[in-house]
Image (tube, rainbow, N blue to C red; front, side):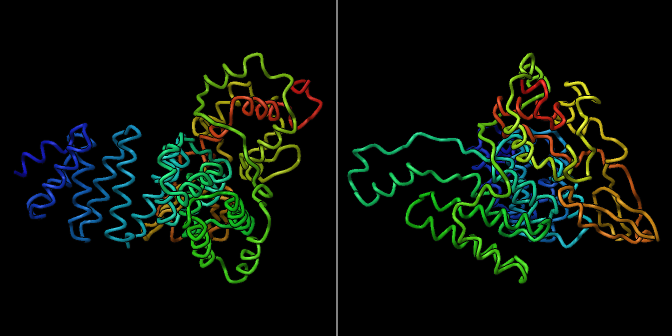
Amino acid sequence: MLDKAWAVLGHNDRFLRFSARTVIEHQPVATWQQRALEEHENPNASLTALCALCRCGDKSLQPQILKALGRVHDLGLREPEALDLFRVYALCFTRMGKPADQELVSKMLVRFEPMYPSPSNAPNKELCELLVFLGSKQVVPKTLQLIMNAKDDVHADSATDDLLSLNSGYASAFKAVSDSRPNRQQISYAFALRNATEGWTDDLRRSYFRWYNSTKKWKGGNSFTGFIRNMRNEALVNVPEALRDEMKSINGELLATTKDLPRAKGPGQPYSLEDVLKLADGKLHGRNFENGKLLYQVGLCSTCHQFAGEGGGVGPDITGAANRYSLKDLVENIVDPSKTISDQYESSLVERNDGSILVGRIVSDEGGKLGVVENPLDASKVTIVPSDTVKERSRYPISAMPPALLNNLNPEEVLDLLAYLMSGGDAQSKVFK
């Protein structure tokens, strides 16, 4: 029976995989746990077997399960398989808890953080929850950017007039939802961030709690308001006491969502280098300066880059980007920021003697201490590491700049942003003529 079920674990039909897993879970775990850990025929078979082991296995197996999931991760997965992978990770943590081994947690953060955000919604939702659970210091600023610009796919209403007429109470509630549809993707991000304890700044907290004001115009059935209220109250628990009263008062502001983080209009789409160059061919004129400036803020570019005398210093000054780069090079730096990383702005992987790992930009190395900025969007927070606790330092090949910054923008917005960058912040530039 076990062999017959195992032969179906890698089937393309997920219902058959589910049936096979159910059969296996009813067998003694000791007869198949090693087989599950060593399964490598195909990603579907391995993930289904490891899902079963997370459900039925002993907690002591967690390090071996995570090691096996890492091998699957390295295979190069399509999106459906990647979603299954993230969900098995989540199941492993739900059933077995957060790993006590900080070295293991650090290595998983090194694996997951460069993947977030991805170009599509579904993986982002799973990755956001994983990164919050693991204590990432990058997930909060990245997710707030996604919250403010996430667009839901709008589906046609599924209820007919005849069906709604059977119950007038439900009909009116359904119509209210249809007229003011909640943004499910934004809600899923905010729901995950309610548990985040790392990576916050005061301004990021204000932006997060202002988002709750935007939900006042949404309708979602009789329990919707209570759900949002409970979510916000749970988030308040993690706010430092000195800021809690201020965060509570923000809820009284009237729809102040865009005060800190403006939104793009969208709808966005995945952009490759070739897509953007084709889009920009002969069209970088007559663009909108004010919209380009707003979109620069939407991308949180000023947090890391100096531009026209303003902004942060984590990344290079891009005021003269048009003079230093061709349009192709500029776009490539945005779409694929990890392809070429200046030595001056590269991140380092710092492995400590206790096995824990830090990834960030080393901003100081003196007096027997390293200063490491782990969160590229908050250069004010520097982690101090005694040099004698460092086992190894190495170059980290992934840029701190996210690779999908254009994907929230529609084509016209992409052009306005490029024009703004090429202008050096000059409203009189020829690109706006």
